[in-house]
Structures are given as structure tokens and as C-alpha cells.
Image (cartoon, rainbow, N blue to C red; front, side, top):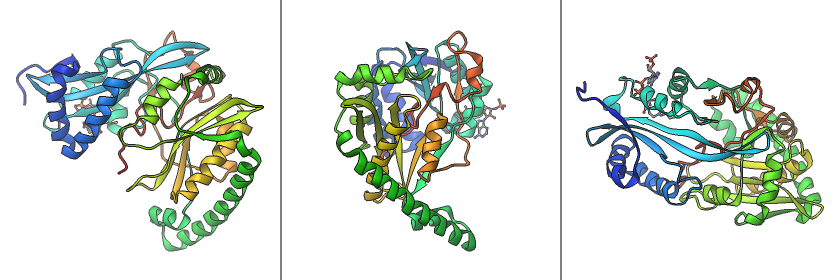
Amino acid sequence: MNARPLTVVAYQRERHEPAYLQFIAKVLGPEECEHRRKVLASMHERMPGRDRFPLRHVILDGERVAGSLGYMPADFWIGGARVPVRFTHDLLVDPDYRGQGLAKLVVDNARALGDFFPGGMWMTDPCYKIHLACGFDDVAALTTHTLALDVGSFVAHKKLPRAKALVARAGLTFTRYRTLARANRTRARAGSTVKAVDRFDPALDETWAKLGATYAVTLARDAAYLNWRYTSHPHLKYRFAIASTNGGPAGFIVWRPSGAGEKRAVVADFLVAKGDVATFERLLAHVIVHASMAGCHSLSVLTTQSWAARTLRSFGFYPRAVRNTWVIAGWQDRIPKEWLAEHDPWHVVLGDSDGDIWSHAT
Ligand SMILES: CC(C)(COP(=O)(O)OP(=O)(O)OC[C@H]1O[C@@H](n2cnc3c(N)ncnc32)[C@H](O)[C@@H]1OP(=O)(O)O)[C@@H](O)C(=O)NCCC(=O)NCCS
């Protein structure tokens, strides 16, 4: 047990990076450390909002890093106003120091900053409990919808008993056939109104702001954020499509096929006006067809919007039973309490928080 007091310190890259990387290499191994080093560099050198100090707190034992919690700055549209927020992410304590209250110390310290924390999400169970113990509040759990594209591999992955596997295989084969037929029809009708793009053009920022403001609360997406987050990710190759209606931009979708060692393709982000089912369908059909052509075993989408969930189900996606926890803090004076129990005001997607950001599917 440590006799020295451990201190929570705002992370200064020049000063703390060597000890922090040593900590990561010790806890997660040298290979993972090398991947993380690149993602961290992208945060410190290119992430919009990187000037919002600190981007991380570390718990120091002398010169040694014993634990850490990161923050991702972002902006949210809340009732049409652009508000700076942070996501907590990347909570990690050195196994030598676990069970001494360090995680609680650093999460407590974050909450005390008083900012609006609209996440974390994608938490492990202990991490979720720690956030609640430190005064974060629970929001209605999130549901991911999944479509099986390679039925054989999908069913094998589920490890079902033989009889159940046969039934699942027959049902999913039929669903896949119907889904692909519908997606191809929708795509043919959409023609050139859905276009793949290489990166986001700042000229469209105003459109994305208008679409974002159709939701009571959602991440503010602009080219600076989207290009940092998805176009320039050090490891992951995302793909983008923009849909237009009557010649004007009406929405976008960000997705990535499963990489080597992965099974599942994911839709990391999408934005259309609230309730614009027709544009969402065109974008979704584009992704389904391309994910199928890329040989992905399944495709997952997360939405908090009931109209979007209905569209997903009508395309053969099914809601995953697993509970994705979601906690927020500092919401008082920013959003009404009722929004903690409702999904409808929120437009939340898989790419929010640090969902996907540490992956390196190669
Ligand atoms: C999760 C983690 C950060 C906890 O760190 P820690 O310093 O040991 O946590 P604390 O000592 O502050 O414990 C806080 C509470 O969480 C509980 N807890 C900690 N680890 C737990 C575990 N693995 N399972 C269940 N509960 C756990 C503790 O019992 C304690 O609850 P209590 O106050 O009611 O007793 C640490 O185990 C870790 O780094 N894990 C690997 C990375 C990880 O999973 N990070 C979360 C990513 S989302």
C-alpha cells in the first residue's frame, strides 16, 4: 500500500507524456500503446477544441502515473444554442493501484469541473458504477440495431444450439434477401442524389447546423469535427455519403466496413432532419448495399430516435438485447430533468463519446 499521497494533476503533454505512455505500455502492452500514441497525437495536435485545457487528468505517485481519465471536448446543439461540452473517456488505473479509490477520485474530480458531460457511453460495468457513485446520472439505456449480412458467419458467431441455429439461419436468410432487395431498389431510385464523398466540405457547415438544430440536444457536427474524427483517423478508414433533396444537401452518413479481425461494420454517425425518414432510408440503403458488397458479416447502427429505429426494423435490423449504459453530469441549468428519462430529445449515435476511437482494425 502506498504511503505517499496520490495527486490528481491536469495533464500537460510536454511534461507528462513520457510517464503516461509508460503507464499505458505497462497496463495495455507495447503494441496497444503504439496505437494509442497515434490517436493521442491526433487529439493533442488536430482535435477541434484541443485548447480546452485539460484534455486529461492523471493521478501521480511521484513521477509515476497510477491512473488517468481523458476528456473529449465537443460542442452540442441544445435548444438551438451551441454549447461547449466534454465527454469523459478512457478511465484507466494501474492494476498495482486498483481497489484504493483512485478511479473514484479522478471521476469525482471531473464532475466537480461543473461542465456539461453528455457522456460517457460504451462503459464497462465498473466504470458505469463509478460514474454513478461520483454523481453522474443515468439516462435511459441506448439500443444498438444490427442487421445480419453474412448469415452463416453471423449465426456461427452467436454459438446457438443446433435447432435454434437452423431456425435463425432460415429466418435471417429470408430477412437478408428482403433487405438487400429493398436497399437495391431504394438505391436505384435515389440515383445520383446519394453521393460518396472523401471528406466534408466546410461550405456545408450551415446545413449541418440547421439539421442539428431540429433535435433538442445533439452533437454539433461541422467539417472541422467530422474530418478530424473520421477522415483523418490514424487507423480506421471511414466512408461518407451525402444525400441531397431537390438539389440541396439533406443529410450525411459515416460508416466503416469491418476491418481485419472484426466482424461488424458500423454506422458511426448520421444526420438528417428529425423525422426525415426518406433521406435516412436513402443513406441507409447506400450503406447496406456497400457493406454487403464489402463482405461484412453484420451492420450496426445506434439511434435514440424512434422514427429511425422504426426504419431500421423495417429494413430487417433487430434491437440488440445488451444494455448500453449512458450517464451524464452537469446537466442542471442546461437541459430539463425530464430529458434524463426520454430518448426523443436526443440524437445520439455510435460515434459519440469515444465509441470506436481507440479501435485499430488492422
Ligand atoms: C475500472 C477501473 C478504472 C477501477 O479502478 P479502481 O481505482 O480500482 O476503482 P476504485 O478503487 O475507485 O473503485 C470504485 C468502485 O468501483 C468498484 N470496482 C472497481 N473495479 C471493479 C470491478 N472490476 N468490478 C466491479 N466493481 C469494481 C469498487 O468496488 C468501488 O466500489 P465501492 O466504492 O462500492 O467499493 C480499473 O479497474 C481499470 O482501470 N480497469 C480497466 C480499464 C477499464 O475497464 N476502464 C473503464 C473503461 S470504460
